[in-house]
Image 1 (cartoon, rainbow, N blue to C red):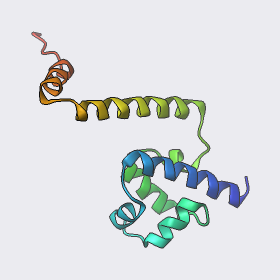
Image 2 (image 1 turned 120 degrees about the vertical axis):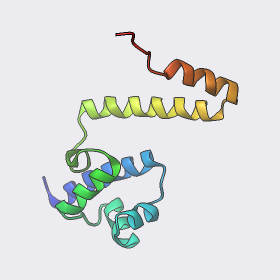
Image 3 (image 1 turned 90 degrees about the vertical axis):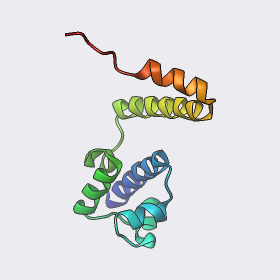
Image 4 (image 1 turned 60 degrees about the vertical axis):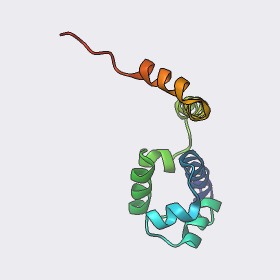
Amino acid sequence: MTDKEQKMIFSENLNRYIKRSGKQQKEIAADIDVAPTTFGNWCTGLAMPKYGTIRKLAEYFNCNVSDLSDKPTPNNAKDEAEIKEALALYQLYKQANPQIQSAVEVLLRPVQSDT
């Protein structure tokens, strides 16, 4: 794999996690203490961070380093679809009236065991 291809794979993965987080690039850059222009270069595939920074990003997004640096696999695509579905359900929950939200919360509570 060429350096350019690796940068583009990283860029695509990073942008997917940024979108998933709902945050702005500059906000994440500040959170991990890098210049917004540097972060922007990673997002466009012009540059790629060092391994230690990729590890910091993986911790930030609560994912594996390979989720940012490797080409997505079919399992990742399935995970992505499940995450999109969960986010859509969460948005519906947030838009629902308080009575509906309470009913959903009751349904999602863990069942208490007598054992």
